Length: 242
Image (cartoon, rainbow, N blue to C red):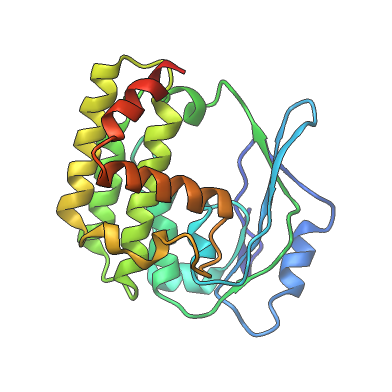
């Protein structure tokens, strides 16, 4: 959606509440480059799966890296020539990571007027469900690492870890264990080779004030703990059977 002075994106099967765009524009009270809000995840029959309000914290932009749910200053996007990757998964991660990294003028608002509809037949819910997009995800992460000079390297490495854990947990159910371990090792070998010791990353601590959702904090903390005590493979064997 091109608004001249501003740009907004939306998925074709999602919708926004009345006055959603106007609400975001009114929040631009200090010439921000990006304004980011939360969203509601729901089914086509109207059942709300969860609501996600964002706190005004540095980690908040990384909680939802799709291009929707944001208002971008057109001049900022054009001047920096931010672009999407032509990859089968996480193509908008590249766009947003660069957009976040190049400005301090980001505003987080508590609006949740974007309705993200759950489509069980969508590409994101089918194509990567069997861990068959690991190479594409690694390609995206590699492009980000190779092309970006991060302002906050530890936060970026937390994003790599968060993304990897989400992908493994989202895609491993009812998948043959041999494939789960193969793809897990492929992805986490990349993580280990391209980050510092993530066990010490401050963003995975349970009692930090980063703005991360409590449930996500717990999931990431437990996943890393299972790695530390060498119980991750038995866990993935059980998890893949669920």
